Amino acid sequence: MDPIRFTSTNGQAPVVDFRNALLTGQAPDRGLYLPERFPTLATAERAAFAARPYPEIAFQVLRPYMQGVVTEETLAACCQAAYDFEVPLEPVYEGVRVLRLDRGPTASFKDFAARLMARLMGLFVQATGRTLTILTATSGDTGSAVASAFHQVAGIRVLVLFPQREVSERQRRQMTTLRGNIRTLAVEGKFDDCQALVKRAFADPELSHLTLSSANSINIGRLLPQAVYYFYAAARVAAPDEPVFFAVPSGNFGNMMGAVVARRMGLPMARLVVPVNGNDEFPRFLASRVYRKIEPSRACLSNAMNVGHPSNLARLVALYGGYLDETGALHRAPDLAAMRRDLFSTSVSDERTRETIRSAWQSHRLLLEPHGAVGWRGFLDFLDAQPLAGRPGVVLETAHPAKFPEEIQALLGFTPEVPAALAALDNLAEDYDRLPVDYAEFRDYLLQTASCR
Ligand SMILES: *Cc1c(COP(=O)(O)O)cnc(C)c1O
Image 1 (tube, protein in one colour):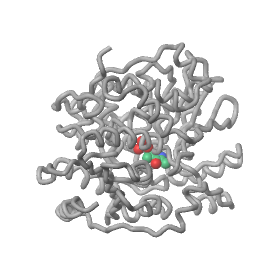
Image 2 (tube, protein in one colour):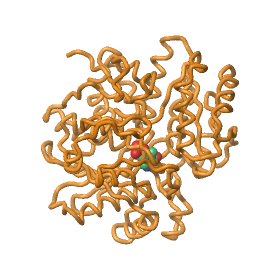
Image 3 (cartoon, protein in one colour):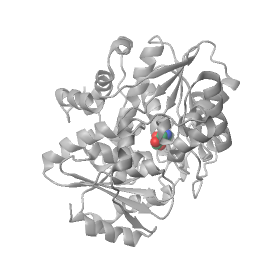
């Protein structure tokens, strides 16, 4: 079969291969890349996943997208190296489990995409002999996952922008203690301000001589690896043709888009539950057909989900036949009836998030942090409307509870055990620069730092 090519959601950019889509991040027309078709995995192939380790499943799921650009041997080796940690499925009650995606080096699910992407980008860039600058805006966990994954990758330097007051101390330390090819910038604003600065830099002709790329969830390289764990979990909890209910706590919608991709690749899936925090633009859109981004985004407890206009929504809308541009303008409505059949979304307030951390621990000895608690609560809301009737359900926990020690201590009266990788950070020196929300200053900073290494 021909290699899969990638098209932009804005429809004005040339069609490219995986290598190109990965290196550019955002398409030149400011749209997001999507594969022009989704390869399907046969039932027998998915059935065999039940006994396969994670890196092998990743290889099988991703292989069709990379045909012609990465050899099978290289891809297999990248998957082995990227996924060298556990992916536990914790039984909670009856057929319901929590998929813990928090055992990577930075203790968030973002390690899954970032670690594979860094290895592939490193390969492509080293082949060109140039230096690539990765600009990334973070609401907390992207920055640390990206910084950790790219640390010491030859040919690549990374600049991470984070909202000064919206990340926890531990999240900040995960980014600011690496040094070397990793630079961090504290922006006196919100996540959306960081994201807007990055987006403008990409479109700026005065910066076109710098080879810029993004590692945000807009990059297709972030999206595809996030389809893998749905196959992994389904094979371990259900028969190959049995639909699974997944619940995915969501912010920028990259994680839930991984589920949507997995479904398009033939994974049987029941309603996909997409809980959000107080940034409730998506459940409102599903209910009302009117899309209104939230500006500025609301600062909630689950800080990595404080997104008032999820970039990946453009991809979701595109897959349902609509057209949403990068500013949030809906040019063509998607098939909302189909979306409502496939998706259930609900908003979970901070108060209910806290109450859920308490009740999950009291009822099930299930230890959740704020993001996972939004996911769990959303799943329970969904069950109120539609009982599982014995079918398997999987709720994603996207961060390690030890990243939120104060909150857990206040709610449960103990401090979660800290994984070794996080504990080590407390003794390392930090290094970062500060910047107001001002594009001209940001551009100067980029130009000045581009020449030093
Ligand atoms: C980034 C993040 C999310 C949100 O994921 P999206 O792909 O942006 O929807 C949820 N939980 C944690 C811990 C995160 O870091």
